[in-house]
Amino acid sequence: MGVGGRLRTRSITANLRRPRAKVKRRENQQTNVQCLAQSVNLCNMAAMKVGFLAGANPHALAIARHFSSLGVDCFGIGRGPVKPGPLFIAPDGYRYYQAHIGKQNGLVFEVLDLEQPSILINLCAQGEGAASFGPESWRFYQTNCAYLAQLVETLRKREWLQRFIHIGTSELYGSVTEPAHEDSPVIATSPYSISKAAFDAHLQVMRLVHGFPMNIVRPSNCITQGMQLHRIAPRAAISAVYGQRLKLQGGGAAQKSFLDTEDLAKGLLAVIEKGAVGETYNCGPENPMSIRDLVAMTIELTGAQWDDVVDEAPARVGEDSMYWLDSSKLRTLGWKPTVPIRQAVHRIVEWARAYPDVEKMDWQYRVTP
Image (cartoon, rainbow, N blue to C red; front, side):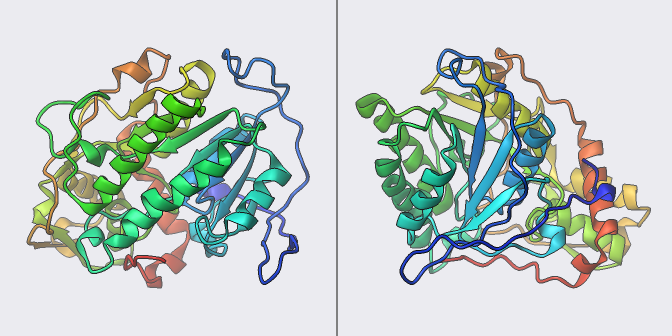
Protein backbone atom coordinates (compact mmCIF):
# COMPACT_ATOMS: atom_id res chain seq x y z
CA MET A 1 0.00 0.00 0.00
CA GLY A 2 1.37 3.42 -0.89
CA VAL A 3 2.30 5.95 1.75
CA GLY A 4 -0.29 8.37 0.47
CA GLY A 5 -3.07 6.15 1.82
CA ARG A 6 -1.60 6.17 5.32
CA LEU A 7 -2.37 2.91 7.02
CA ARG A 8 -4.58 3.29 10.08
CA THR A 9 -4.92 1.28 13.27
CA ARG A 10 -7.68 1.78 15.81
CA SER A 11 -5.91 1.72 19.15
CA ILE A 12 -7.27 0.26 22.39
CA THR A 13 -4.96 -0.25 25.37
CA ALA A 14 -5.39 -3.63 27.05
CA ASN A 15 -3.33 -5.19 29.83
CA LEU A 16 -2.55 -8.81 30.48
CA ARG A 17 -2.29 -8.85 34.25
CA ARG A 18 1.05 -10.02 35.64
CA PRO A 19 3.08 -8.93 38.67
CA ARG A 20 5.12 -5.83 37.86
CA ALA A 21 4.50 -6.08 34.13
CA LYS A 22 1.91 -5.30 31.54
CA VAL A 23 1.39 -5.68 27.84
CA LYS A 24 0.31 -2.86 25.57
CA ARG A 25 -1.90 -4.00 22.75
CA ARG A 26 -3.02 -2.41 19.50
CA GLU A 27 -6.27 -4.05 18.65
CA ASN A 28 -8.84 -4.01 15.90
CA GLN A 29 -11.66 -6.41 15.19
CA GLN A 30 -10.59 -9.98 14.49
CA THR A 31 -10.69 -11.10 10.88
CA ASN A 32 -11.54 -14.58 9.69
CA VAL A 33 -8.91 -15.69 7.22
CA GLN A 34 -8.55 -18.38 4.64
CA CYS A 35 -5.47 -20.53 4.87
CA LEU A 36 -2.87 -19.66 2.25
CA ALA A 37 -0.62 -22.58 3.18
CA GLN A 38 -1.45 -25.92 1.62
CA SER A 39 1.87 -27.68 2.21
CA VAL A 40 2.18 -31.07 3.86
CA ASN A 41 2.64 -29.50 7.27
CA LEU A 42 -0.17 -26.95 7.08
CA CYS A 43 -2.83 -28.55 4.91
CA ASN A 44 -5.11 -29.39 7.85
CA MET A 45 -5.30 -25.79 9.05
CA ALA A 46 -8.51 -23.88 8.45
CA ALA A 47 -6.80 -20.52 9.01
CA MET A 48 -3.35 -19.02 9.24
CA LYS A 49 -2.32 -16.56 11.92
CA VAL A 50 1.14 -15.03 11.77
CA GLY A 51 3.01 -13.58 14.71
CA PHE A 52 6.09 -11.36 14.39
CA LEU A 53 8.83 -11.23 17.00
CA ALA A 54 10.23 -7.68 16.90
CA GLY A 55 6.76 -6.71 15.74
CA ALA A 56 7.49 -2.96 15.60
CA ASN A 57 10.41 -3.54 13.24
CA PRO A 58 9.71 -1.72 9.95
CA HIS A 59 10.34 -4.87 7.93
CA ALA A 60 7.97 -6.86 10.15
CA LEU A 61 5.34 -4.19 9.53
CA ALA A 62 5.98 -4.22 5.77
CA ILE A 63 5.64 -8.01 5.68
CA ALA A 64 2.47 -7.75 7.77
CA ARG A 65 1.05 -5.20 5.33
CA HIS A 66 1.53 -7.62 2.45
CA PHE A 67 0.19 -10.60 4.39
CA SER A 68 -2.81 -8.61 5.62
CA SER A 69 -3.63 -7.53 2.06
CA LEU A 70 -4.13 -11.25 1.37
CA GLY A 71 -6.42 -11.72 4.37
CA VAL A 72 -3.89 -13.12 6.86
CA ASP A 73 -4.37 -12.24 10.54
CA CYS A 74 -1.16 -10.67 11.93
CA PHE A 75 0.13 -9.46 15.27
CA GLY A 76 3.49 -8.51 16.74
CA ILE A 77 5.47 -8.58 19.96
CA GLY A 78 8.44 -6.30 20.65
CA ARG A 79 10.50 -4.77 23.41
CA GLY A 80 9.79 -1.13 22.59
CA PRO A 81 6.67 1.06 22.59
CA VAL A 82 4.80 1.96 19.42
CA LYS A 83 6.97 4.31 17.39
CA PRO A 84 5.91 7.66 15.88
CA GLY A 85 3.62 7.47 12.85
CA PRO A 86 6.28 7.61 10.09
CA LEU A 87 8.07 4.65 11.67
CA PHE A 88 5.05 2.49 12.53
CA ILE A 89 3.07 1.93 9.35
CA ALA A 90 0.89 -0.98 10.39
CA PRO A 91 -2.04 -2.56 8.52
CA ASP A 92 -5.57 -2.42 9.87
CA GLY A 93 -6.17 -5.18 12.36
CA TYR A 94 -2.53 -5.45 13.41
CA ARG A 95 -2.15 -5.98 17.16
CA TYR A 96 1.08 -4.98 18.84
CA TYR A 97 2.14 -6.13 22.32
CA GLN A 98 5.04 -4.59 24.19
CA ALA A 99 7.02 -7.33 25.93
CA HIS A 100 10.80 -7.91 25.98
CA ILE A 101 11.89 -11.19 24.40
CA GLY A 102 14.58 -12.38 26.77
CA LYS A 103 13.78 -10.33 29.86
CA GLN A 104 10.01 -10.92 29.95
CA ASN A 105 9.58 -14.36 28.42
CA GLY A 106 6.77 -15.23 30.82
CA LEU A 107 4.85 -12.29 29.46
CA VAL A 108 5.85 -13.10 25.88
CA PHE A 109 4.43 -16.61 26.21
CA GLU A 110 1.26 -15.29 27.82
CA VAL A 111 0.73 -13.30 24.61
CA LEU A 112 1.69 -16.23 22.37
CA ASP A 113 -0.59 -18.64 24.22
CA LEU A 114 -3.41 -16.11 23.87
CA GLU A 115 -2.87 -15.60 20.13
CA GLN A 116 -1.60 -19.11 19.24
CA PRO A 117 -0.02 -18.28 15.87
CA SER A 118 0.49 -21.13 13.45
CA ILE A 119 3.43 -19.23 11.92
CA LEU A 120 5.96 -17.26 13.97
CA ILE A 121 8.44 -15.05 12.11
CA ASN A 122 11.45 -13.86 14.06
CA LEU A 123 13.14 -10.55 13.28
CA CYS A 124 14.60 -9.96 16.76
CA ALA A 125 18.16 -8.69 16.47
CA GLN A 126 20.70 -6.12 17.37
CA GLY A 127 20.97 -5.30 13.72
CA GLU A 128 23.87 -3.00 12.91
CA GLY A 129 27.19 -4.51 11.86
CA ALA A 130 29.24 -1.34 12.40
CA ALA A 131 27.95 -0.86 15.95
CA SER A 132 28.78 -4.45 16.85
CA PHE A 133 32.51 -3.57 16.99
CA GLY A 134 31.87 -1.22 19.92
CA PRO A 135 32.08 -1.71 23.69
CA GLU A 136 28.66 -3.38 23.80
CA SER A 137 29.51 -6.08 21.26
CA TRP A 138 28.45 -8.71 23.81
CA ARG A 139 24.85 -7.54 23.54
CA PHE A 140 24.75 -8.81 19.96
CA TYR A 141 25.38 -12.34 21.21
CA GLN A 142 22.85 -11.87 24.01
CA THR A 143 20.02 -10.62 21.78
CA ASN A 144 20.79 -12.45 18.53
CA CYS A 145 21.59 -15.82 20.02
CA ALA A 146 21.24 -16.39 23.80
CA TYR A 147 17.79 -14.78 24.23
CA LEU A 148 16.46 -16.58 21.15
CA ALA A 149 17.87 -19.96 22.18
CA GLN A 150 16.08 -19.54 25.50
CA LEU A 151 12.85 -18.66 23.69
CA VAL A 152 13.05 -21.69 21.37
CA GLU A 153 13.54 -24.06 24.29
CA THR A 154 10.06 -23.16 25.55
CA LEU A 155 8.55 -22.59 22.12
CA ARG A 156 9.34 -26.09 20.84
CA LYS A 157 6.88 -27.52 23.39
CA ARG A 158 3.92 -25.51 22.08
CA GLU A 159 1.60 -27.65 19.95
CA TRP A 160 -0.05 -24.70 18.22
CA LEU A 161 3.18 -23.76 16.42
CA GLN A 162 3.42 -25.12 12.88
CA ARG A 163 6.43 -23.16 11.63
CA PHE A 164 9.11 -20.91 13.14
CA ILE A 165 10.78 -18.82 10.44
CA HIS A 166 13.97 -17.06 11.44
CA ILE A 167 15.14 -14.05 9.43
CA GLY A 168 18.88 -14.50 9.09
CA THR A 169 21.41 -12.34 7.26
CA SER A 170 23.43 -12.38 4.06
CA GLU A 171 26.35 -10.89 6.00
CA LEU A 172 27.38 -14.26 7.44
CA TYR A 173 28.77 -15.24 4.02
CA GLY A 174 31.21 -12.33 4.28
CA SER A 175 32.37 -10.29 1.31
CA VAL A 176 31.98 -12.29 -1.91
CA THR A 177 32.96 -12.11 -5.57
CA GLU A 178 30.19 -14.42 -6.77
CA PRO A 179 26.69 -15.22 -5.49
CA ALA A 180 26.69 -17.14 -2.19
CA HIS A 181 24.38 -20.14 -1.95
CA GLU A 182 22.95 -21.63 1.24
CA ASP A 183 25.83 -24.11 1.62
CA SER A 184 28.58 -21.55 1.02
CA PRO A 185 31.12 -21.26 3.85
CA VAL A 186 30.22 -19.01 6.77
CA ILE A 187 32.78 -16.21 6.81
CA ALA A 188 31.30 -13.91 9.42
CA THR A 189 33.36 -10.72 9.80
CA SER A 190 31.61 -8.85 12.63
CA PRO A 191 30.13 -9.67 16.05
CA TYR A 192 26.74 -9.04 14.42
CA SER A 193 27.16 -11.65 11.69
CA ILE A 194 28.91 -14.10 14.05
CA SER A 195 25.97 -13.90 16.48
CA LYS A 196 23.47 -14.42 13.65
CA ALA A 197 25.41 -17.43 12.35
CA ALA A 198 25.50 -18.91 15.86
CA PHE A 199 21.71 -18.88 16.19
CA ASP A 200 21.30 -20.33 12.70
CA ALA A 201 23.46 -23.26 13.82
CA HIS A 202 21.46 -23.61 17.03
CA LEU A 203 18.18 -23.77 15.12
CA GLN A 204 19.55 -26.44 12.81
CA VAL A 205 20.53 -28.57 15.81
CA MET A 206 17.09 -28.08 17.39
CA ARG A 207 15.60 -29.37 14.15
CA LEU A 208 17.93 -32.36 14.05
CA VAL A 209 17.55 -33.35 17.71
CA HIS A 210 14.03 -32.25 18.63
CA GLY A 211 12.28 -31.96 15.26
CA PHE A 212 11.68 -28.24 15.80
CA PRO A 213 9.63 -26.96 12.81
CA MET A 214 11.93 -24.22 11.59
CA ASN A 215 13.16 -22.50 8.48
CA ILE A 216 15.89 -19.92 8.03
CA VAL A 217 15.43 -17.22 5.40
CA ARG A 218 18.51 -15.11 4.69
CA PRO A 219 17.48 -11.94 2.88
CA SER A 220 19.73 -9.41 1.24
CA ASN A 221 19.62 -5.72 2.14
CA CYS A 222 15.89 -4.99 2.35
CA ILE A 223 14.49 -1.48 2.05
CA THR A 224 11.02 -0.22 2.87
CA GLN A 225 9.07 2.82 4.03
CA GLY A 226 9.52 3.64 7.70
CA MET A 227 12.80 1.75 8.08
CA GLN A 228 15.43 2.81 10.62
CA LEU A 229 16.59 6.31 9.79
CA HIS A 230 20.32 5.54 10.00
CA ARG A 231 20.02 3.16 7.03
CA ILE A 232 21.32 4.50 3.73
CA ALA A 233 18.01 4.37 1.78
CA PRO A 234 15.94 6.59 4.12
CA ARG A 235 18.99 8.70 5.03
CA ALA A 236 19.61 9.49 1.36
CA ALA A 237 15.93 10.25 0.71
CA ILE A 238 15.59 12.55 3.73
CA SER A 239 18.84 14.33 2.91
CA ALA A 240 17.85 14.92 -0.72
CA VAL A 241 14.25 15.94 0.01
CA TYR A 242 15.04 18.31 2.90
CA GLY A 243 18.45 19.66 1.87
CA GLN A 244 20.52 17.89 4.51
CA ARG A 245 24.11 16.77 4.00
CA LEU A 246 24.74 13.03 3.61
CA LYS A 247 28.06 11.56 4.71
CA LEU A 248 28.77 8.84 2.14
CA GLN A 249 31.27 6.46 3.69
CA GLY A 250 33.88 5.06 1.34
CA GLY A 251 32.29 7.06 -1.45
CA GLY A 252 29.54 4.43 -1.58
CA ALA A 253 31.83 1.89 -3.27
CA ALA A 254 30.53 -1.09 -1.27
CA GLN A 255 27.97 -3.19 -3.13
CA LYS A 256 24.77 -4.53 -1.56
CA SER A 257 21.88 -6.54 -2.93
CA PHE A 258 18.93 -4.21 -2.35
CA LEU A 259 15.47 -5.78 -2.20
CA ASP A 260 12.07 -4.25 -1.48
CA THR A 261 10.69 -5.86 1.68
CA GLU A 262 7.50 -6.65 -0.22
CA ASP A 263 9.55 -9.17 -2.20
CA LEU A 264 10.85 -10.67 1.05
CA ALA A 265 7.22 -11.05 2.16
CA LYS A 266 6.46 -12.94 -1.06
CA GLY A 267 9.50 -15.12 -0.47
CA LEU A 268 8.29 -15.95 3.04
CA LEU A 269 4.90 -16.95 1.67
CA ALA A 270 6.63 -19.23 -0.84
CA VAL A 271 8.51 -20.90 2.01
CA ILE A 272 5.32 -21.29 4.06
CA GLU A 273 3.34 -22.68 1.14
CA LYS A 274 5.93 -24.83 -0.63
CA GLY A 275 9.15 -24.91 1.36
CA ALA A 276 10.43 -27.97 3.19
CA VAL A 277 10.60 -27.68 6.97
CA GLY A 278 14.18 -27.46 8.21
CA GLU A 279 15.56 -25.86 5.04
CA THR A 280 17.43 -22.58 4.65
CA TYR A 281 16.61 -20.21 1.78
CA ASN A 282 18.46 -17.16 0.46
CA CYS A 283 16.27 -14.29 -0.72
CA GLY A 284 17.86 -11.61 -2.86
CA PRO A 285 17.87 -9.93 -6.29
CA GLU A 286 19.78 -11.16 -9.31
CA ASN A 287 22.59 -8.62 -9.09
CA PRO A 288 24.19 -6.32 -6.49
CA MET A 289 24.28 -2.54 -6.69
CA SER A 290 26.75 -0.06 -5.23
CA ILE A 291 25.61 2.20 -2.43
CA ARG A 292 26.80 5.10 -4.59
CA ASP A 293 24.40 4.11 -7.38
CA LEU A 294 21.52 3.79 -4.89
CA VAL A 295 22.22 7.27 -3.54
CA ALA A 296 22.52 8.69 -7.07
CA MET A 297 19.15 7.14 -8.01
CA THR A 298 17.57 8.62 -4.88
CA ILE A 299 18.93 12.08 -5.59
CA GLU A 300 17.75 11.90 -9.21
CA LEU A 301 14.23 10.94 -8.13
CA THR A 302 14.04 13.97 -5.82
CA GLY A 303 15.36 16.41 -8.41
CA ALA A 304 18.28 17.42 -6.17
CA GLN A 305 21.93 17.65 -7.23
CA TRP A 306 24.71 15.32 -6.04
CA ASP A 307 27.03 18.11 -4.87
CA ASP A 308 24.21 19.72 -2.88
CA VAL A 309 23.66 16.52 -0.88
CA VAL A 310 26.75 14.32 -0.64
CA ASP A 311 29.93 14.65 1.40
CA GLU A 312 32.27 11.75 0.73
CA ALA A 313 33.95 10.24 3.80
CA PRO A 314 36.35 7.40 4.65
CA ALA A 315 34.95 3.86 4.63
CA ARG A 316 33.60 2.58 7.94
CA VAL A 317 35.49 0.03 9.99
CA GLY A 318 34.82 -3.59 9.05
CA GLU A 319 32.62 -2.91 6.03
CA ASP A 320 32.49 -5.80 3.55
CA SER A 321 32.87 -4.89 -0.11
CA MET A 322 30.00 -6.97 -1.55
CA TYR A 323 26.95 -8.96 -0.45
CA TRP A 324 25.45 -11.12 -3.20
CA LEU A 325 23.10 -14.08 -2.87
CA ASP A 326 22.28 -17.07 -5.04
CA SER A 327 18.51 -17.37 -4.51
CA SER A 328 17.92 -20.16 -7.04
CA LYS A 329 16.70 -22.51 -4.29
CA LEU A 330 13.89 -20.11 -3.40
CA ARG A 331 13.16 -19.56 -7.09
CA THR A 332 12.39 -23.29 -7.42
CA LEU A 333 9.39 -22.56 -5.16
CA GLY A 334 8.08 -20.07 -7.72
CA TRP A 335 9.49 -16.91 -6.15
CA LYS A 336 11.18 -14.06 -7.96
CA PRO A 337 11.59 -10.35 -7.18
CA THR A 338 8.79 -8.26 -8.65
CA VAL A 339 9.51 -4.74 -7.36
CA PRO A 340 12.15 -2.95 -9.47
CA ILE A 341 14.78 -1.17 -7.39
CA ARG A 342 13.80 2.19 -8.87
CA GLN A 343 10.22 1.65 -7.69
CA ALA A 344 11.43 0.61 -4.25
CA VAL A 345 13.54 3.76 -3.95
CA HIS A 346 10.68 5.91 -5.24
CA ARG A 347 8.45 4.52 -2.48
CA ILE A 348 10.96 5.67 0.14
CA VAL A 349 11.27 9.12 -1.44
CA GLU A 350 7.47 9.49 -1.39
CA TRP A 351 7.42 8.31 2.23
CA ALA A 352 9.98 10.98 3.16
CA ARG A 353 7.85 13.63 1.46
CA ALA A 354 4.64 12.40 3.08
CA TYR A 355 6.10 12.61 6.59
CA PRO A 356 8.00 15.91 6.97
CA ASP A 357 8.54 15.15 10.68
CA VAL A 358 11.32 12.75 9.69
CA GLU A 359 13.54 15.73 8.81
CA LYS A 360 14.12 16.49 12.49
CA MET A 361 14.00 12.98 13.95
CA ASP A 362 17.04 11.51 15.68
CA TRP A 363 18.58 9.04 13.25
CA GLN A 364 21.62 7.81 15.20
CA TYR A 365 21.76 4.04 15.83
CA ARG A 366 22.01 2.93 19.46
CA VAL A 367 22.45 -0.55 20.89
CA THR A 368 19.27 -1.28 22.84
CA PRO A 369 19.45 -3.51 25.94
